[in-house]
Structure formats: C-alpha cells, structure tokens
Length: 222
Image (tube, rainbow, N blue to C red):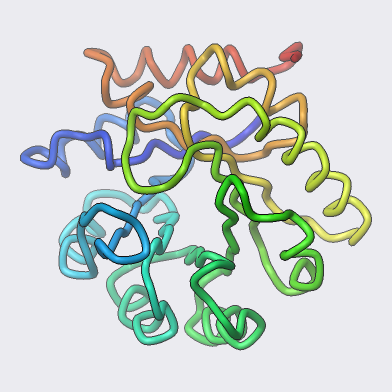
C-alpha cells in the first residue's frame, strides 16, 4: 500500500490547523508541505514560521518540498521549524551531494525532486545517498494541474534504477494525483502519493483519502 501525503497547498489557508487535523483523522500517512519562493517557481506559499506554527497539530512526518533557489541556505531553518523530510530540486542545486549531506546532518531525511522535462539520469549518481525521489507529474508552481501521462514511464524507469541500488528509497509522485491517476503510478512503482485537490477539494477529507487509498491499493493496475 502506498503512503498518502495530502498537500496543504490545496487546503483552506484560513483553516490550516483544522484541515491538517482532518487529514490526520482521515488516515493520512504524511503531511506534504509545498514551499515556493516565487523565483524557482512562479508562486509564493509559506516558510518556516508557518511550518513551526503547524508542528504542534500532528506528530505525522512533515514532508517538506523546497521549490526554492539556494536551498542550502535554509535547510537548518526548515529542520528547526519541524520538517522531518526535506526534498530539494536537482535543477536548483548545483552541488547536490553536498546539499543532501547537509540535510542529513540537520537530522532530517533527504529527498531529491525532478521536474517533468528533467532526465531521470540526473539523479542516478545520488541514489546511494537519498531517502526519497520525488517525480513531478505536473510543472511545479500551482495546484490543480492535469497529470502529465509521460510521468508513468519515468516512474517505472526510476523504480528500476532504485531496485538496482538494493536500498529502500521512497518513490514519491506529485501532481494531478487522484483516484483515476493513482492506479497507474502505483503500478509503475510509486510508493508515496501526494494529493492536494483530490483531498482538500473534497467536502469530506476522510472519504477522499479512503477513495484514493482504495484506488491505489492491492489490485491497482495501469
């Protein structure tokens, strides 16, 4: 069964604590935090103060996706704010091994993310160091976008690369994930599903998570 990580990017920002609590009650495994700086991606969301204020709401892991330039400058700050897993973009990080080492030194688990047009070979040499690879199935910046079908093949190829390492590395997918698209990405090898609109866009968060988990569970196929 894949892990379900609701993204608060699609939540009601006036009720973030309440919405996270609803996701926790609904059976979420992680809480996904999309951090955007308005430079690396064309949107601006939130930073460490918001994460710090939300940390007391739940003990679930905060899966923190840094869509920002110069992430090295802020790793310790996000860790202190409560991030349990910190993912950086290969496109934003010129010295990726050093960045991953810095994340681990902060005490967080480390992930690396790829945009839809970035060759998956760009992470091959870092797989021995990371805990997670995040495949973007939309171009990052805004929630509610349509799933890019080519992501399925990318996930399948990355899953094979991960198996070759002999390590346990989570393979996460983010963008357009819902009960329709989830079966294909899970069949391809995804182990963590990030869903924003499919969860928080529903009037019943618990039911939405259950539908997503049911669609992605045993028997899911392309």
